[in-house]
Image (cartoon, rainbow, N blue to C red; front, side, top):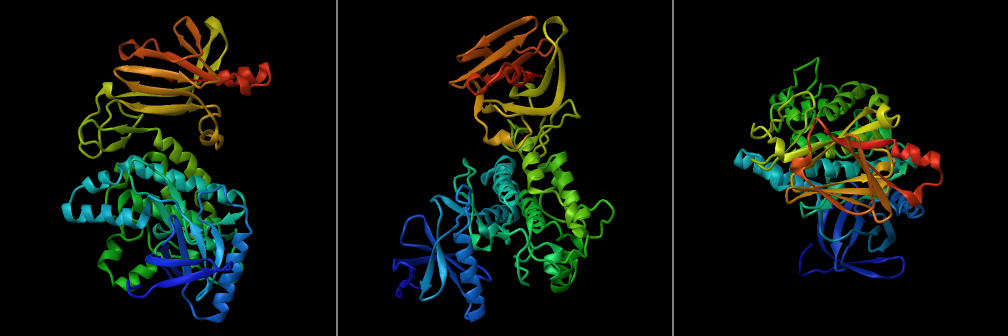
Length: 467
């Protein structure tokens, strides 16, 4: 598109849009920014009358679906001339995930260091972005839809690394769980093997594959099937084999012929549960789609992962807390984390009362890093309801004190030894008061949301222990 020739398109109501630049292009069409703030236009780039008619029909179908509560840049109105397409809205301050990957990869390639990785948000932001993606896709799947063509070019994220907003574009590809027809839509490198081979249409299982590939690439800067065998082979031949599922993934436990030969090590930037999901998808799920972890499973594991990251006080990277070792060592600089740099909370189930009280671990832990904040919610941790439920308690670490702030409608019970005290307002506890041999137990709840005593007892039976 040149500056000398204006490109104007019109929607069904005669509104005009001046296309000011191209931000992406694929096999189906071209996405352009316009002279209107936060408004994008996708233009169908085929001259085939049948394909145009099929695309127009699909756009009209998506326009009729009720998905406005998800982070999807859905078609708002159809473009009818001079070419067909549609208008979508996307908030300002977002860039494509493809740009983020390229920027970080270039730094890794040019500087030979992980500085670019940190500048684009480090491990923490990547996990937060993946959690946001998994949340939207999980909800989409639960309603009986599949996204269809998942790739970094179709995902937009906050340009400011302090934020982790995620939106999906190219939403005209959304379909019912199994796309009708014979097209096998995918972006090269992200299509599930059965789709690449032309044996299966897109569905939630092919979305699950594409998400796992994207997650692996975002975390490691390596494609999960582009290992040593692919690097040393004839590009067109071995890449085709890799995409069709004929090769092992780069960390296959039983076949190292295509082992990892670049990027960051998976064990340095993923925890045990995340690695297991990758293994299930790329080993068992390569030939058996039903073995692939669902987006709901990813959502649950990533929520835990967000809460189990330690901030390195030396290199400023983040790394995962390992409950199996005594000293926590940064995977980027090999420095041991100072015990005074984080606090560990463990969810426990409280049984009994008074002197007969017993506490049983629920195997959920959360990290509070120095000078940071975490929130506790009304719903049980580890469930789908956790993220959407209201906050009952905010815990801040600042000025060598832990600040506990119950919600405006909430209360909290703090127990230490034989002492129990209920608070309805903010309190501050000096760090030197936290003694492992005599831990604090913290329970928070919202009275207004409890309808009966039995439910109240159930809510109060779960609490968090400072370990």
